[in-house]
Image (cartoon, rainbow, N blue to C red; front, side):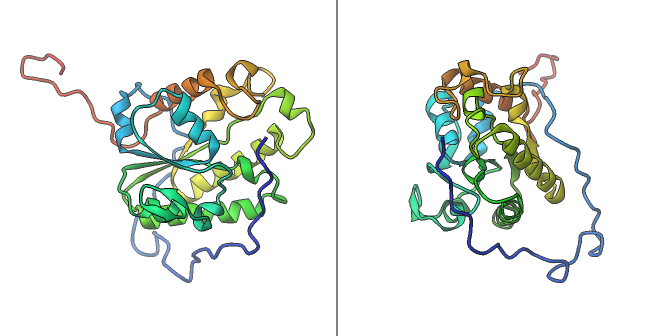
Length: 246
């Protein structure tokens, strides 16, 4: 199970209405959030060439066991929505916090998988405020990118029944926070969890090796879900004059 992460001592400073005009006040049309990412025609894996995966050890598991040969992975074990701002780790850009490294990268899509290491934080307010600050930072650093919040993955019945802070009820509460923030900031919400729940609302044992992290089979389910729930401009097949599809 993930070690209990220490909650930030101070809550992040968020932008306020006084700091900037709301879109409608500035004469801009307010975009309408359309809900979680719907199912789409499966994309080729080259779609992920323009994707950076930001996360913790579960993202590392996807890299190791998902069979993914495209995309960039930016992660460290134990990462939280707070420590990606502050903890210096080894990255392709040098030793620095993940968000600083990401700020030097240019990608069209940023997939975020964070939250399991924060389950021990008191309540949900600190998690909500820090997650909001994370989304704002990503929007500021990457204004043209599609931000994709992935729901926190469930845990197995064995872990759930231990009675600790890592449990599926707590995960559901945090996923509700992510969902609400996705709507608030008009970013994509990818409900990965829905395909990894059994009839009892728990992670099937055949998809995990420790009850928390996915095994090869579980990571393949995760990857297949992303393939069939693409975001952004994914393009359409070109049609030649002969009418044949290329």
